[in-house]
Each structure stands twice: as structure tokens, then as C-alpha cells.
Amino acid sequence: GAAAAAVLLAVLFFVVFFSPALALKNLRVEGNTLLTTQEAEAALAPLLGTPLALIADSDAGALLGDRPEVQSVEVTAVPPSDLVVTVTERVPVAVLQNGSEFLLIDEEGRQLKAVGERGQAALPLIDGGTDAVNSSVFPTVTAVLAALPPNVLGMLDHASAQTVDSVELKLTGGQTVFWGSA
Image (cartoon, rainbow, N blue to C red; front, side):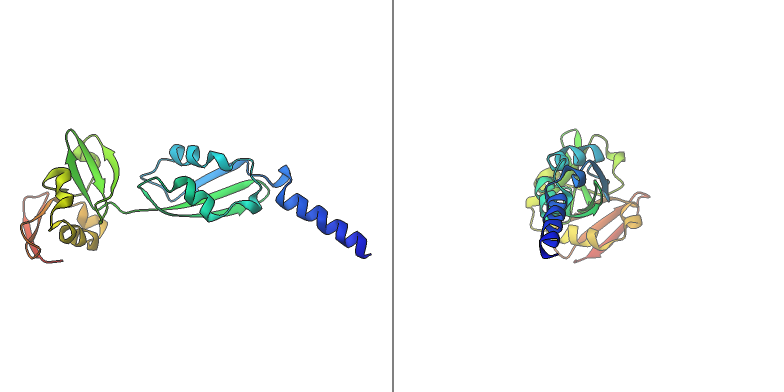
């Protein structure tokens, strides 16, 4: 009886960890808006064929780690051969102009994505182009923008500050809000 149990356990171990029966065949990516599904699937392609039991969050995180849009990754195995990768993206709070393109940035000034037209991003433009990130008032401006709900961010046209206590928000309707400090 003990020998039969040991053999059964060994077969089960082999099936779970080494058999192609439980290998990854289908990927599903969720939670992504900035990162396209095609880009995510292409980055995660090296996981295909790996047994589901051997895939960890860190494996998917390492493959997507160089993407500026991605903050974290969580994987869920769906036997026999599916994997759901849930992406948590960084939140864009503003736009910077870089020549003819516009860069979506997060609160830390990280460039998340480039868009060709200003209208493609319902976010305020921070004056000063990409050099604005080096400004001493930049963290104050982005902290104010990060505190605002998305529907209010969509109503803003520009955000600027001369000092850390003089953040100004210009609405698309032409009104100006003198915010003050973060």
C-alpha cells in the first residue's frame, strides 16, 4: 500500500510540475489600458509552455518590469492551461509636450506613454515641456494633480506654479483656480 501511494504521489508530482498537460497555453491580460494587450502578450510569450504550478507573480513581473506603465502584476492560474495576468498600471496625472508629441506622466514624472495629439489625453498640460520634471515646483504640481479625481483632471487644460505655494490650475472653460500648495 505504501509503495502504491508513493508511486501515485510521484506520478501526481510529475503531472503537476513537468507534464505538458498542465502547461500554459492561453494568456489573458486584464486591468491594462495604457499597455496594449498585444504588447503584454508579446512580453509574456516566454511563459507559454511552462507548467502553471511553476509560474509566479515575479515571473510575469520580471517580463513586464521594463514597461513604464506597469506598477505591479498578479497572476492567477486557471487549470488546465490558462493564466490570467492582472496588471496594475501607474496613473497618469498630466501631459508634457515633447516636440510634436505629448507624454503622459505619473505623479513622479515617469513617462508612461506618448500620444500624437493633445486631444488624445484628457489631462492637464504642465508648461515647460520635458524640462518641467527638473523644476523644483514639479513635485508640488503633480501632487496636486494626483489628489484630484479623474473627472476633475479631465476638466483641466493647464497646470503650473511659480513657487511651491502658487499652484494654478486652468480649466478648459478659461477659469483659473489658484490652488496654493500641495
